[in-house]
Amino acid sequence: MKPVHALIITGLLILVVLSCGCTQEQKPAAVTPPSVSLTTSPAPAVNPYPDAKPLNAPAAFGSGDMTGTATVTKYIVKPYYNWTSPTWLSARELAAYAPPKEVRLGYNMEKPAAGNTFLFVFFKVANTGPKAIYALSPQQVVVFVDGKTYSYRPVSDSDVTIDGISVTQYDYQIGKGGTGGYIQPGTSNAAEGYLIYEVPDSMTPDTTFVIANLDYQTRAEWVLG
Image (cartoon, rainbow, N blue to C red; front, side, top):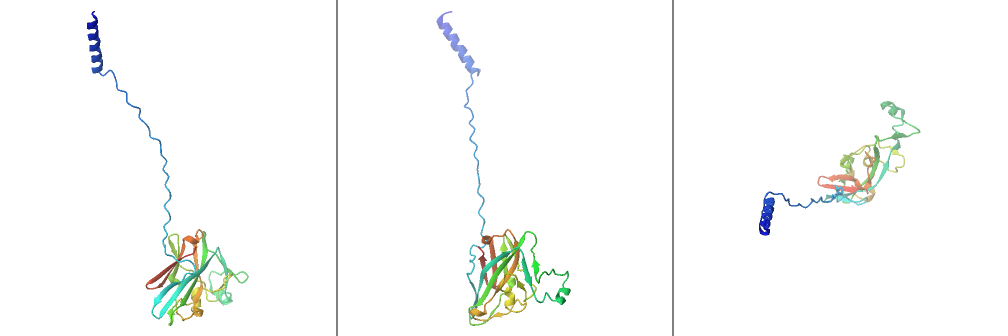
């Protein structure tokens, strides 16, 4: 065979092979992206009362000649407390109480429910005007802890003495067992005392708030920590 013919035949064979798809295009290998670990930070807790006052900061209320201030002065946390009362230690009072109250060495012991503790909030209301003002009721003061509101727990009588507490319950400063009354002008006439709340023992001062509805248009909040 002549060389020219051989070259022609070889070229034709190459064209046939290419047209039959016998040669395949090499595709690039797939690249797997590196795995990325995403970490999300927990959302910061929302402060429900960003304008809450610190302890000993007075909140003003009232108008005209009838004005006053309310103040949360301090707090104490007690896992339990002992109290005594001449009235409750009398035979007549003990006999009327059912079931019988446990009395040991002149003291009654109060314990909270499991997982709770007692929070003593010390509250003061002063008259800053020339006329007498209505005294706040303890029901107007609540404690807010972890999304829940707690009302105060009253003691049994005005003559109750709690171990380690030198003052009486707030409302008994106004009148025996009363939750109303008036506060006369002058610093010396201020009404003050404690209010007891049973709250979770997981409470922390910087997330515990005292909320008081001082009058029909004024509300004040304090943060304990």
